[in-house]
Amino acid sequence: MKRITNVFNEGVLDLLANAGVAIPYFFCLTLYNQNKNIFVYALPFLMLYTFRALGMLLTTFITLPASTMLAMSSFFGVIGSLCILDASNPVFGIIGGILLGLASSWIWPYYLTVRSRGKMDKEFKFNRMHTLSVILTLILLIAVQLIATKTKVLSLSFVLLAFLFFAAMVGGMNITHRLTFYQGIETKQKFRVNSLFSLIVLASLVMLVFIIRYTRLKAVSQTFDLIISIVAIMLFLFLAYYQIDIHKKIFPVSLVAINRGVIMNYVMLYAVFDSTVRFGFNSLMLIYAIYLIGFELGPVILKKYQSFRYPLLLIGLILSLFNFTYFVGLFFCAIFVGTDNRILNDALYNHPDLDSERAFLIKYQLSCVGNVSQQLVYMTTIYFISYFAKINALGFFNSHVTDGPTNSVLYRVHIFITAIVFIYAAMTFYFAREKE
Image 1 (cartoon, rainbow, N blue to C red):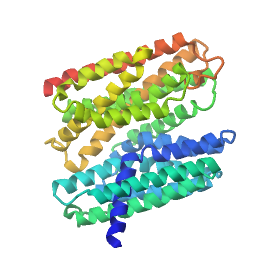
Image 2 (cartoon, rainbow, N blue to C red; image 1 turned 60 degrees about the horizontal axis):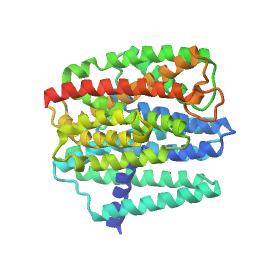
Image 3 (cartoon, rainbow, N blue to C red; image 1 turned 90 degrees about the horizontal axis):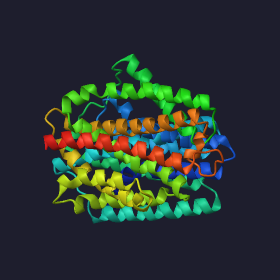
């Protein structure tokens, strides 16, 4: 019985690590959609979105072992899920959203670090029983979410989520206790601030991303749009400055990791809003399915032609400019991310200038920089347009807004954003090809 429980817990950990970004997000989004008339229910979703987007940047100040951080991420998931049971109280809603955001951001990279260490030392195995545990947990999640949505008793979802995060925490402890590398490692908490300026800018970035997410839900004055744009430009320049040291150390791998974040944000966030408004239907699940399929098939399709991944990406970006090939283009982008992901993992994990314990964290920190940078460019663009053209910025996210952008404006913005992503991808291709 103990062995079955351990296998179940480790299977749950694997599922939450792989889907931990999406599951809490969908639960909190459902909670908001069912209570749109009560603003307090938007707070968990807004805070989760913000700290999920920026969580990896916070790890630059934390030097705890990956085993400790893996347990902490699951623990945050437990407490965060329980807090949202009382989301009508703004304090609990905010705390719950922050903790679930950090759990979503941290659980996969730290699990990947621990798992890779275990495989390297031949002390980690994932068998068929673990796979069965993942399938059973996924079925349970879907069933409970459907029941909770139908009955509008979403507390069932968050109770289950708290239980699964607890199981994942126990599963993570089981795995790390088997790995000799983590035995006797100092677990005393360490927190360092490289500079007070860095901490202030990071706090400003947290607030900016929160405000950006908020302005996708509620209308604000166009003067406020302009202020957000100016602040976004300043923080975007700081992010570019922030990357200088790591570029000096691992260039051009650093450029590749940032490009990964840019492309992922282009497909999973920007394209969802753009296509929903342009095509008139909610494309979230369609794009999510396209991304997952492309990500998984990418390494198989391009197994013998990995050097084609960048040309395929550039073709995909061009195809996304046309309505009839839009989703085919996104699929090509997803194939690129899936193929490039494995190559990037190997490049970072075996890089002579990086500690293997920090390699994947560096990858996700740089991807986070790319993700946030692409968001800032997009939001700055539409806020400037909304201010100078007197257009309601909400129209870029909601087709039902009467004074929103015309199809012509939407298309020109799409060309501009795609062109920027294309230029960065082409520049990355040039330097990466030289290195390869």
